[in-house]
Image 1: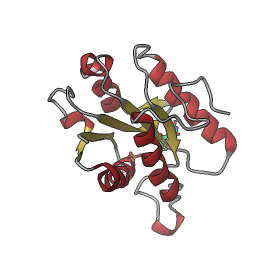
Image 2: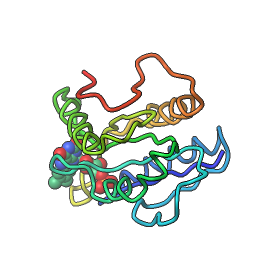
Image 3: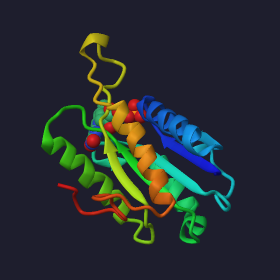
Image 4: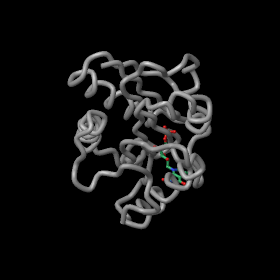
Amino acid sequence: MDILVAYATKNGSTQQVAEAIAAALREHAGDTELHAARQVRESLAGRDLVVLGGALYSGRWHRDAHRFLKQHRPELTAGVPIAVFGMGPRSDDKDAWRHARAQLDRALAKRNWLTPVAVTVFGGVDPPGRRKRHRRDMRDWDAIRNWAQLVLNQAHGRPEPNSLQRAQPTDG
Ligand SMILES: Cc1cc2nc3c(=O)[nH]c(=O)nc-3n(C[C@H](O)[C@H](O)[C@H](O)COP(=O)(O)O)c2cc1C
């Protein structure tokens, strides 16, 4: 397969998640490129799958993720499958996760032409300023790798129970 994983990050944690997803996709499906979203200038036409991840800051999805969708709307509406993720709550608090999901859904609702094969939120990481031992890191690497597998299944047209065909207002 010809897969692109693109990420929009400020402090690097989203890039690391994108790297893990790209590695899992490479292992299971072959050719997978990884790039910062803002560096992807060429058309997505011919790609078998695109994964786009972006950090959430102050209720908004990273602007490079928005720009990516805007720039590549023609190929994405022409049928290149895309899966989307956001980052990320930094606690176990259910409300934080619900809010993050609502923030991502709001961002995607602006692109009502978009029909992702999967949408999710991963836990985030405190910015680097904090002293290392106090830095929270809510990334669940097994969940991240499992999602990569789910995305592949979705792209192959094998729906999973409870998976999302498009952004929902909340996922409860
Ligand atoms: C100032 C600030 C604001 C944030 N706002 C949100 C937010 O609104 N929603 C959310 O889910 N996470 C929020 N986060 C958490 C980030 O999404 C998290 O730190 C993420 O891992 C950052 O990704 P990056 O390292 O790729 O930039 C915020 C973090 C900071 C430092």
